[in-house]
Length: 134
Image 1 (cartoon, rainbow, N blue to C red):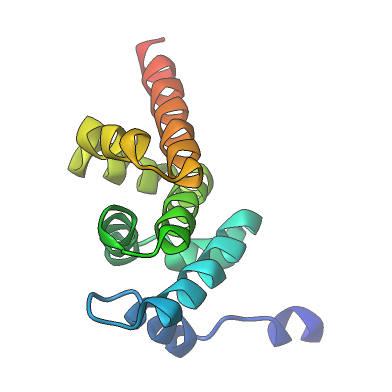
Image 2 (tube, rainbow, N blue to C red):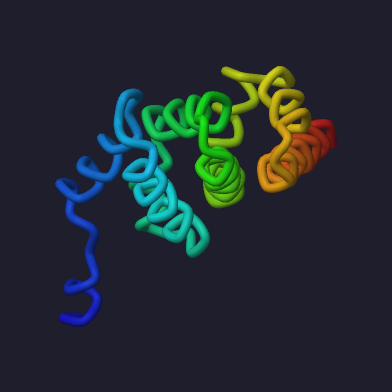
């Protein structure tokens, strides 16, 4: 299908957006990159899977917990929660690597958007734990 082929996300684009998440990048540019990933994660599927990596997850956690701009922290947290929803591997990575400390940090953040995302991660984690217990 020619239409489907036209809507591919090339690896170079994934790499460019991912590089914008690195520490030291301009926070406004980071916000655009995080927002791009958030929008893709909202739809899930093949494109979201391209961003469901350890590198992106680690960068989102770093931004969520360390960015100066409240809007950037909130968007990173929301993106992380959406990534966890679209990819069980991301949820597992977040819970295994960062655990309850990340969730508590998110719940204590002054931003309601960060708090909401932390609650979403907690709910997902509890649901995952409940599913494993069955």
